[in-house]
Image (cartoon, rainbow, N blue to C red):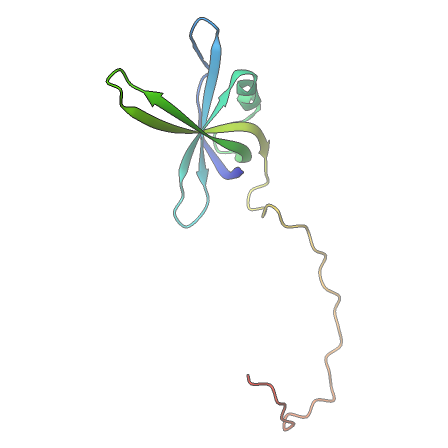
Length: 124
């Protein structure tokens, strides 16, 4: 899956625990009728992928959805979701993604033997 939009925020790399788990968050604002601010986390060596990006830049981020189950001390089961990025790339502003570039159609000569009074059998 992917998320495309404008970088709103890039967080600092955070380190957790004795094993040095690293996490860095980015917020991407989608450009649609109702823009969404999507927080995406990059972990471990992927945190370095964000070094070359800036707030305001248009990006496409490849993501995976992650889900976890956790049982609290009271025995209640809780579920958590996260969006984890694994690749990011800059895109040109306003460039539609996933659509190949199509060369302009060749010009054609208009038909000049059309009789306006001819009726066809098309229902529209």
